[in-house]
Length: 114
Length: 117
Image 1: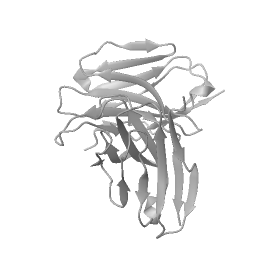
Image 2: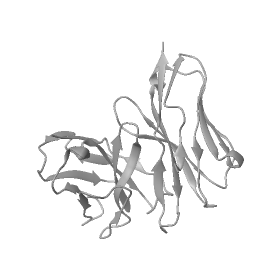
Image 3: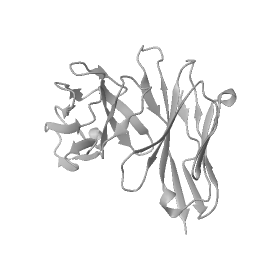
Image 4: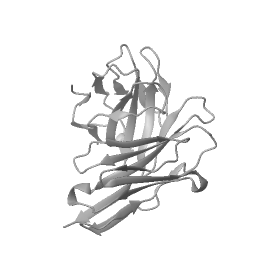
C-alpha cells in the first residue's frame, strides 16, 4: 500500500506558466487537503475536499485551484505561477472530513518558480 | 493571534539527554484535537499522536511522552534519552471547528531538534 503519492517530486517553473501538482491516495479516504510549507511559517492549508465532488478554500487559496472528480485524486493547479508560490507542497488525506481525524501526508513536491 | 505557539525555534541537545518541546494553543471550542507530527531531514511528515480535549491523561510511547494540560492550554512533548535519529522538525497542530463551521488543522511553526552524538 503506497498511501499517498505526489508528482512531481520537484519542479522548476518559469513565472506565468501553468502547473498541476498531482496527488493520489489509495486508502479510500473521504477527505483530502493541500498545504504549503514555507520556512518559519509551518504548514498552511490551501484547499481541502471533504468528499468527492466538493472542495473548499483554506487559509491561503489565492492563485490555486483544485478539483475532486473521484475519491483517489486531488490535483492542485497553479494557473499562472508567481515566485511567491515557491514552496514545498504537501497533499494529505483523512478518513473523516474535517480536521478532527488524523491526516496522513504525502512525500511533498518542491516547487521553484523563477 | 497565533492559535498554536511553539516558542522554541531550535533546540540542540547531546545524545541521551531528555528534551521537552513546548506547545501552547488557543481555542474557544470545548471539543478539539491536538496532534504532533515529526518531519525528519528527508522531508516527509510523520504522524506521532492525536489527543482529544476530553482526555487529559498523559501518554507514553517508548521514549516519547506527552503532557496535556487544559489549565495551561499546553500539549508538551518529551523525548527521553534522545538519539541522533530524533533530529527533526516537530510540529504541534490544533484541530477545532471555529467560526467557519468546519474543522481544520492549524499547525505551529515547528521546533527544530538537533541531537548530536
